[in-house]
Image (cartoon, rainbow, N blue to C red; front, side, top):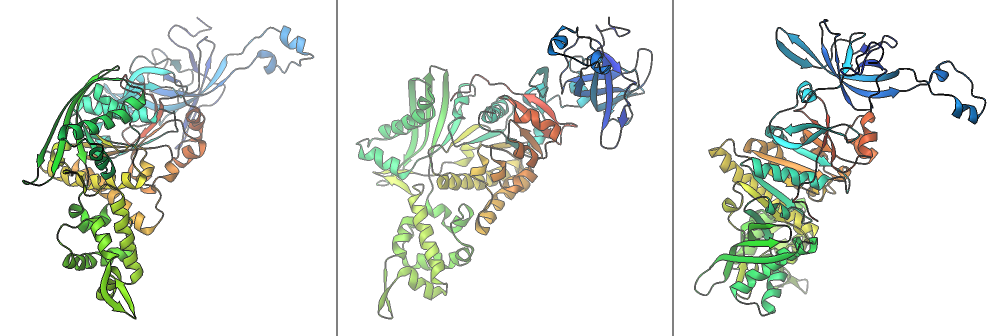
Length: 581
């Protein structure tokens, strides 16, 4: 007991010393306390009427704690440091500034909570919240995707789960955080929770190699594994010509870069490959490899799908997955392609087209033999510089190593997307690829996802696909040219605005939001912000009073702002046991 306040039940009361106030912009009150509780900025408290009185109950947050010695109040001078040390400390009651966050009123037995519209009563009693009281008064959802535990800005955890409704994912999420802030850990937690608790397809686009280890907690992970022409030819040239040896070479490369190089010891591997022969004398394609792995961290089953593109499947609309063609080249592209087809057989490849265009045409102009692209320039009526852009584009595509991958009787194609994109956990392995290769793969997959989910959603309106796009600035950066801008906006519009009606959710993550396409900031209606620089927090419209905490936050502390929440909240996410590397 301290004064007239029962410190076992309450920690203070609303003071009459400083006027409480409420405006359209803010609601404040001031608590005076003589209890010995440790109070910190950001801490939640409950303000309620005195026993026997009626009125609202408020959820408040501490914004300032004012501690003062009585000698300071009396302005007693200090003559020397010795006197300062010898004078016994005598504190006045602490004055605590409160931000009123929510007001709850009893309307005939129904409790309604909303933004404060009335001031807190003078001498209203202040106490610490009861279990689940903060969650209730904030109106936080009680079901959905588990993000973590409710927390204070200091990182101190309140033992209450914070959930994000699955419908919020359809309005897309942006995760922002510097290196070491826990950004990738949060993304992996989201992937794990979605895979374990929903029937969604979770598609993780992995540029580093962090998302494969969730296979130890999720059954039957599927892997989209790009196979480059240089890798396939290297295998066969080393004498590994049997189908079994090619399959093992692919699995060894996959395990080495995603497990062994992450410090995980691979103890035992069991492999079974599937594929088919195309014609009596045709090549062999390996469509799927099922394998079981035992490591020092755990065991898992997975299916790997070798992936590469064929020129014939994308040549008509190559400009939808790459920005290397200029706008002028796109206008004349189909006409040029028709002329090329007249002079080449049907087995078109980008390498073959390039070689054809730079070959001599047999036509002489002004005493000089024209190359085929120069001849086409005259036939179609397109400027030679536009044709030169096409020539460079065909060369660049052929040198990516992702098209027409075949060697020594083996061929790699796109797998069945119906088989790949069904419910479950899918990882796209983009590690150790160039940015150009990564972006082409991602844009191609976005097109396939859009078409696939259109068919799926027509049958089942509850069907959901969540795309986890880590390092999103690599794929959707600030546009450097109008051609690049048009390509990115096409894909962003399809997978976000139009994709929403098809059950497509995108979770973008980056540590460089200033390099991210501006449309993403607008399209993401839930933002999860971990430790970031001050200028980043300002650009994301984080209130100045919160920036000090977020700029210095420890790993896993998240400031979450969502249209599904009445107020932004702090959440603490923790590492699960499937995080390695």
